[in-house]
Length: 153
Image (cartoon, rainbow, N blue to C red; front, side, top):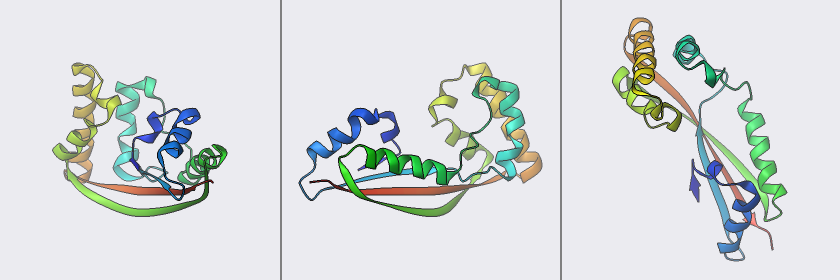
C-alpha cells in the first residue's frame, strides 16, 4: 500500500518492484488525496497571490481528475504486473482556520522549500484573502482516490 507517495517512484521500476514482493494472489493499493478541479472559491481567489509571488509555478493544471485517473489506471495496466484495476473515489472536506490552513501549506514540499521572504509574502497574501473574503475559515475539499489492482499471474 502507498498513501500519497507512489508518484515519487519511477513507474518503470515501481510497479514491477511492488509486484515482486506480493504473493501470487496479492493486490496493490494506491491512494491519493487530490484537490477537486476546477478550483472554486478561495482556491481560485488566491491564484493572483501565487502568480505574483511564485510566477514560475504557473497556473494550476487544467487536467481534470478523470484525466488523471485514466492516466494512473493506464500506468498500472501498462506495467503488465497487475490486472483488474478498480478505482474508488471519496469526497470529503475539512474546515481550517487561516493559521491551520497555512500550516497545511507548509507540509507541501514546494511551499516548504520557498525562501523565508517569499514564503512570508505568499502566506501573508493568502491569509489576507482568507480573512477578508472568507471570514478566516477555509473549507478545503478533498477527493481521495483509491486504486486497487490484482497481481497478474
